[in-house]
Image 1 (cartoon, rainbow, N blue to C red):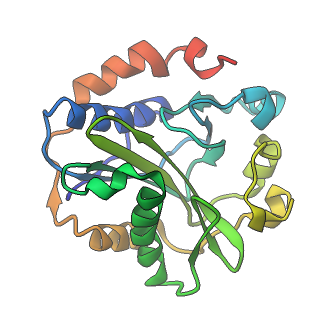
Image 2: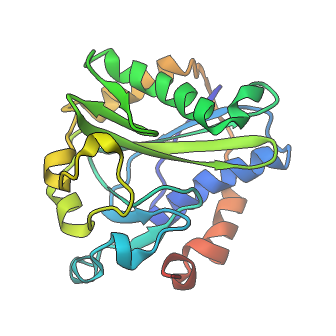
Length: 239
């Protein structure tokens, strides 16, 4: 497993880099499984590949605060990111781990490693629902995946010291909710871990045994995807 600890200048570029790492692996230009860690310096709302913005996002509130609403390449519902929210991404080969072709196995495998990293500091952290991580029944991590022919991209959020009021401000109640949520609003449902992102970064790298650095990342492909997709309003705001 190679480690890429890299945050690019804009949320658009960061979303594009996740997809570029997957596409690079698919094109056999890289034979390494990759763990990427990053932390956006700008607040942004990130919606799922098939999400309807008007169902999940308070568009007026985002526009008033000039918060971009961007679409990622994976599924799932909307999240708010920014400083204090550690982002992780893993690109994994099916050849090395064929069982990951089963989505339920992929969820348990990846989230098992992520929750074990958190458990180094907070032993009561646990998997809840299909793809949430929670602490005392309060969600601190939302996750999603994208499956290709030979590789999997799995990525998610880890709320460390994030202003949770932004989630209440910019997101509507999600159209799909896990049973453990119990119809709670965002303010009663999400929580911070209260951890320094740097400490959690180190724990994640240790858990994934990413003792080598990914020296070359797909810079040109990232820029190409930004131009083709992630800078295009028609991609982000399509219904």
